Image (cartoon, rainbow, N blue to C red; front, side, top):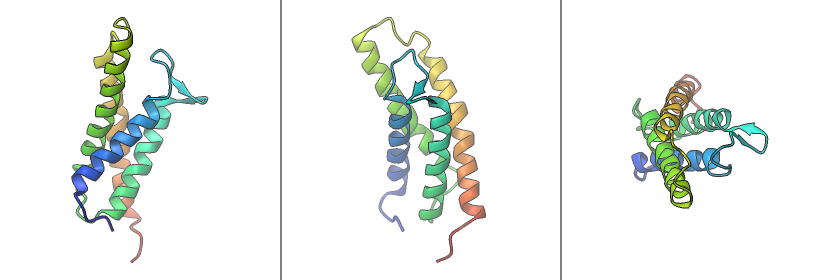
Length: 122
């Protein structure tokens, strides 16, 4: 069981999910190795929420929001990096962040619900 700083762990895992889904493609492409980034983000968020929900006993309904916070931090870092390289990119970045929110929060809740529904036996 994970006992050390569960809130920070959730944000860090969300950052990793956002990094995997968002950092390995150009700003104007929506695929990573042939997989849509939003499908990848949803699948990784579902897996992360299920894993965290089943391993952290103090996990509450705030967990999907903490995962999403980490994902948004990762996406914002990538957007800022792209803007430093070329200021004409990401002219609709608020919309990008909203799409990330609309994908990650429902999948986070689904993973959390599955972790509570099918809790591993100790």
